[in-house]
Structures are given as C-alpha cells and as structure tokens.
Image (cartoon, rainbow, N blue to C red):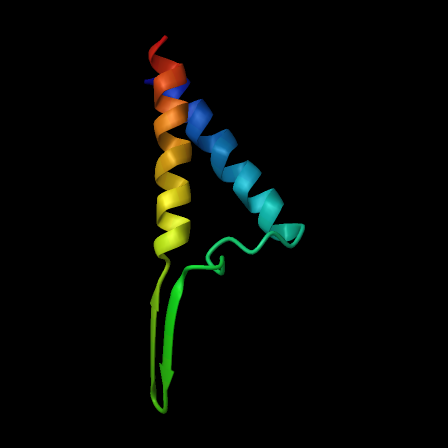
Length: 64
C-alpha cells in the first residue's frame, strides 16, 4: 500500500509539473466542448482514454 501511495504522489506531482510547463491536459484534440449562452458542457473523452491507458500500464508494471 505504501509503494502505491508513493507512486500515486509522484504521478500527481509529474502531471502538475507538466501542466505548469504548458502541456494542455484536459484540452486535447478529441475532447468535446459545447458552448451556448449561459451553458458550457465539457467532456474530456481523449484525456480520459489517455489517462486510462497510462494507469493500466502503471498498474501492470507494479504487479510484476
């Protein structure tokens, strides 16, 4: 459990660093945005898929 928490903390720190450097997480091509007067709908489909793949690889690596 401790190893998992350390990896999760490092991953969050890495994402924060990348966002600070200007990587557009949450605004990737393929993310759906609908803007209307008084209403904005945002669905980050591409970001969700990318995050899912990365987490799958990390957990596969941790199982070994």
